[in-house]
Image 1: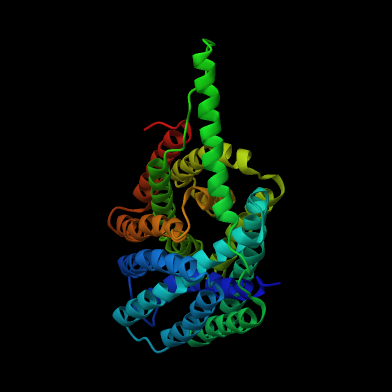
Image 2: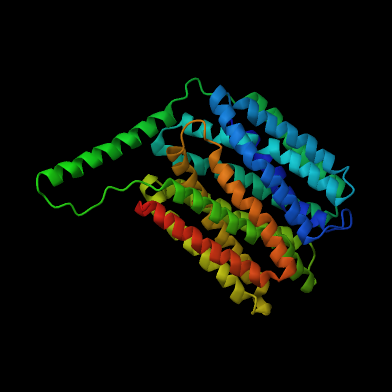
Length: 404
């Protein structure tokens, strides 16, 4: 029940995720694709050190609820302030400041899940949380679809987003509690170190006995893991940030209503939820690590496939929607596997580092994607994203083979 507030929070940001880019290039703000990129790159650049700070602070104080409440309350205030913005600069400034506090709930939430459950259940519990909250995101997109269909104004839409965040704050104030003891991640770290030492001693004794050893003592390459996360986030952000405008252009060419944009992203979010459901029912530590590389290379192939789809205008909407659904499905499973792995690899006090790495890639991609789209066209966006996904695949391959 403690996750109920997060459901409403995700509803708000699901609606806002598609509405905000359209709002920026619409009649109220008169922005451009590059302005969208600047908004996200400023916000994510500020969120990067903030994620590390909130993660460090919640582990240092061993208090998690207060940072979740802070995130939801500040989001309520700033989304309301969006209604007062009359130009691009003001909106960018408000969104950037909000992002500093918005990320305050991310690391504490991950720690709560890790501490409330044993390591064997982490993948399933992270996936269950994601299914629940991403269903909220999906409903937020559906809400955006109906709001757009009914002709709600921009101010009313933003007030709905603000109200949903306020509901999230009130519910979390009542339901969220801090764990009495915080020790599960520490035990997992000790267990991982002891397992590595035990395996090393086993191989050493085999060598001393003169018996052949066909395997190498391998340890995950943390630098490669971090590099892979940054590259994957960079490619994802580069691909998806200009996507609402890409879809909007297709819809306008086909003379369809704007509400279809929301409908397509509802299906995309449905792919997210389906991915989390599969991760919840079929995931464990070993399968998660084995599937990370496969998921990344599939993402790369899907990005390149969208280039081919551009040459089939008759079915462009249908094929693009199908690719977005598959992209979202793969992204969900990737997030669960890497998040669970990061809780093992990263020491206490560094819970926010996962979102720092995601934020670095996201910040760069948020500007590069819209910039390439406006300057060179979407063909080059998809080509660059596909190549970057492939580089992420190489990084994770190095990570799991234990190469230095």
